[in-house]
Image 1 (cartoon, one colour):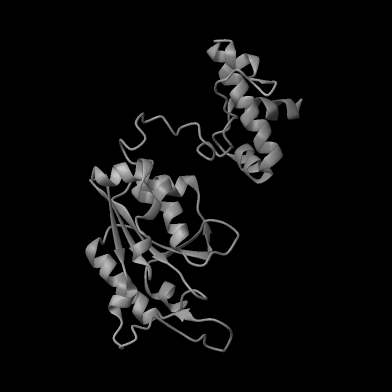
Image 2 (cartoon, one colour):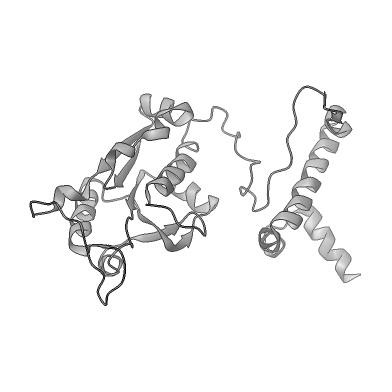
Length: 247
């Protein structure tokens, strides 16, 4: 099965863009995924190929028309009816690694890239579209968000990263942040790689990495730490901490 990415965008020349290089680019050349941009302007009927209009009720900017965008979405559904449809918008639900894994495990994804002041809300009422955000900030359009989403998915496709376990310990895979990494030289500007990582004792190394991951998550991302503590799949150390709380 080849992972197919349909991207509805007013700027199809932006794809594959950076996804044409490195791991994603090699995977694309090897046929592990397909990049298929769709331009909503191809579904317009006026000579200016207009896809937007002024906001109802007044206000600055322009709004993407529901009729034009829906026609493009319908074509995408006809092409690949079994893939999820996501719209990149700051009004969407935050993208998570868990959702990325779900998408990467399927046959592909259709991504709608917003522009201007966004979409006519009726588009989401009329079509099965999942609104997604990559962060609490505003970009010029959804294309950069689509590239982020696709990169996150493509690296998880079979054979793209090499070893199947390559991403298992990364940040967000187990809710918490990843532990710090080090490599040669052993001493750099007077700073030394932690002794435990040079000990060759795999059990001690694993315990140190787990401890640092938890400490860094508590300090840097307390929101993630709360989710980790509340998770039913609590880690052994987390379980011990709860037991201590009861004493």
